[in-house]
Length: 128
Image (cartoon, rainbow, N blue to C red; front, side, top):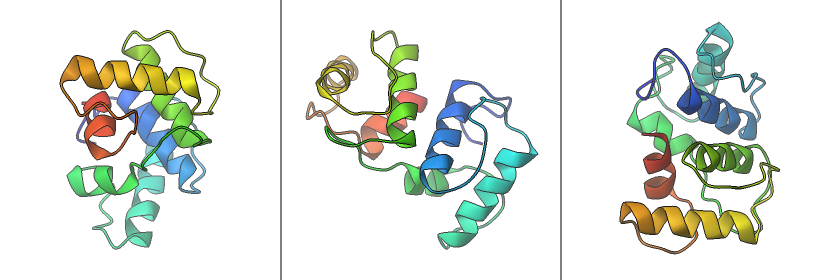
């Protein structure tokens, strides 16, 4: 994985994104054989090189666009990243007003377009 080969928050976020894409993997932050297998399956299903390595092509393919009204595993991963970045937020998998406020604050803090939408720029920035 390009972010943290040993594991940790970025791996946990990857696992939430894999779960959002229908893969069965624990969101435990450990980069083990189950996560690697899920990455290979995702890559194969999406026409990517199925090497189990999460480079830019895989990472930006798996990051969904999230906005107010979004819900599920991907939002849970986003919320966990925001909490890790110091934002006070309930991790509930529902992208509501509090999540949008945190996203806007984060975007402003790091110099991104402040629109409350999490696409590749915001999502990628959170896990780098």
